Length: 348
Length: 80
Image 1 (cartoon, each protein chain N blue to C red):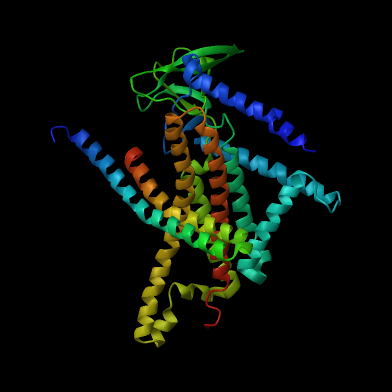
Image 2: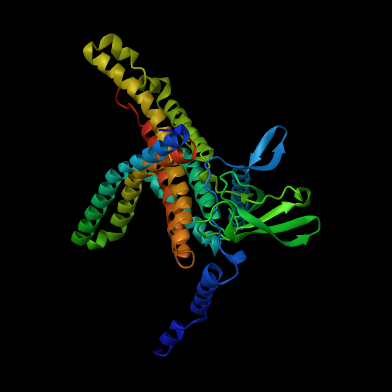
């Protein structure tokens, strides 16, 4: 028994991790400049991938959201098949699923009580979508494989042709000499650009990589859409549970007529409530967007300082924050919806 | 002042830096949450798990304020 422990200490996984660190140090500091990590351009709006349906441009964050949707549908179908198979004890992957659902159910039931069964679909969907989106975003290659385009910021890299697959030329960028920018720093993600053969002479001297896939939460539209949906559902649940009287929260006309000076004050408070709903949308949006986008900036800045050892630790941090933000969004949606179902209980 | 474009750019960067002053409040908030959480865990070690969960949740909320400031700064630098 006592020999087992030192054996474990020098297990093979440890050497794999150390070897990966060594490869990282070699690529970042010693190896040829083609292996060096690059600094990805930090841009706020999502880039077009060149695909479009009709006149509607498909940006890379839409593509990533569709990928997340497909993953969620596959997960849902597999869980459905597992439940249909009649086994009561979950195995493997379904254990995680059961744990997540129990966790969500407990949170919602704690906040909403008897309404829990009716309001759980909205927060649970939001939680799973944000969670899977934030996890998928961290897969290597997600924000680094894309089209080679002329740089917008003027701080691009020179392209280098790697190999050719059919009519598809595969390029990477040379990180040794950043074009136009002598004092540029190196970066975490190993970027690899792909471009189609049609762009044979459109290859730029100073290039950025426009990724095919980009984390949905780093595009402002995704959190904004979720926030708007959440706030609309808050109003819907409010009307369903307390009837049309729910809107007397915003426009307390009855109290204005009968209540005298306090009615006036309540009317002003009602107007504040309307503003508060919009403030909720803003805070929902910027909380999720800001946290995930700040993660991207953090990776690109700290990765430039120490490209070899720091990024894996930052990735752990990012996994943690992705999960926390998904849970925060879920919890706030639950609380807002359940407080709307209980709103103005005693008042007529 | 001779170069208006550079002047506006400089003011943007200055504004972005000043927007991050908002991180002070969030720092105080996160510190208070941590101190309260550690004190509570010291007094009642059995409840450490649930205290830690709620502490991290509170930290995430407090941190969101700093993130708003960061978003304003980022918008000033990259968009405005």
